[in-house]
Amino acid sequence: VKSIGVLTAGGDAPGLNAAIRAIGKSAIRKHGLSVVGYLDGFRGLMDRRHVRLDSEALSGILIKGGTILGTSRDKPHKMRVGDQTLDMTAAMVETAANMGVEAIVCLGGGGTQKNAKRLADAGMNVVTLPKTIDNDVWGTERTFGFDTALSIATEAVDRLHSTAHSHHRTMVVEVMGHNTGWLALGAGLAGGADVILIPEIPYSVEKVAETLMARKASGSRFSIVAISEGAISTEEKAELDRLLAAKGDAGDSDEKAAAKQAIAAYEHELTQSTTMLAERLEALTGIASRTTILGHVQRGGSPSAVDRLLATYMGADAVQAIVEGDYGKMIATSGRHIVRLPLEEVAGRRRTVPLDHKWIEAARTLGVGFGD
Ligand code: F6P
Image 1 (cartoon, rainbow, N blue to C red):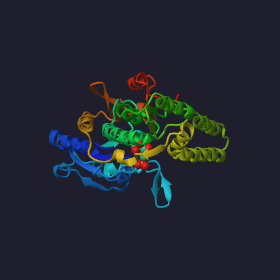
Image 2: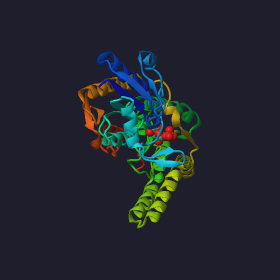
Image 3: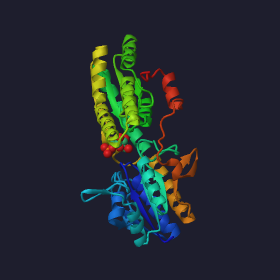
Image 4: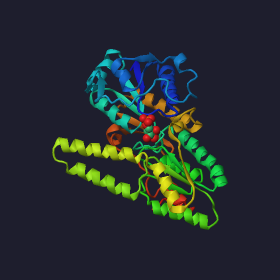
């Protein structure tokens, strides 16, 4: 191998530049390869938009947040080209080959693993790294980006304590994480939240209100509720299950499309539910409540030392995999070791929080409520 490519796809996460740097430096220094970076994810590969990643381009980026290459959520098999949506997978493989790029490293979350597998199936030599603040990529204990976001969210929960305490309020704080609860659970536990609501455990609003009232009765005049953006109540889950079953039962393609639309509309409605939860808790408990939605601040800024380390050793191993011809793999962590998992195993799966996870068990022991 003489020339390799790198791209970053999906939502950005702290540590991407550390990974790009590690891939570039080890490729250039250790193996004498040349490296190009495609801009804005798979779209740059399609459009042949790229930059040369030489030593100068890689210098000083370790501590930077975001990605110097830019990113997008475009998928190779569904690219907007003019006013059409086209499958450009084969064209991308050809573009890379025409440029003399023999292997490519794709940095991304669950969606990127699926898209990278599509390129691998079409004949491209692919290796991937797992990055996302959600920590939900199948097969790896950690994704880079998670540790930084966890610190930011924890600091936010910390800071809410003094104002909650001063005003005797319930503070409901929404944490990112997509459909998994790693970030809300971690930040809630580390930040001393009294209630933690995650998608893996559907909650009852009445149960949450009971926990808040019990705290008040025991003399605590404020509470912190950390809620994952994907958490749903038992009623919401029942409605979602009903809509999913309707989609399963749908006969022709029109019915299926309508059922899909109904699910999307309901999921959109659910994104508003944190503010509604705070209002319902106030009505049920009589305790004034406020909502804080942390949002994209959790993805911003310089990566933590832990994320820099993870991104660096994973990036170096991605190049090692390429040099060994060990393609179609995602670099993952397992205990103290790096492992390489086949993309077939990873793509299309999500790592949710196991209900017997040590963080959940510890939280329950400490009296944290999960609304169940
Ligand atoms: O996957 C990372 C993530 O930040 C999720 O936690 C969140 O649901 C989503 O991306 C937000 O996406 P966007 O940046 O497109 O609004």
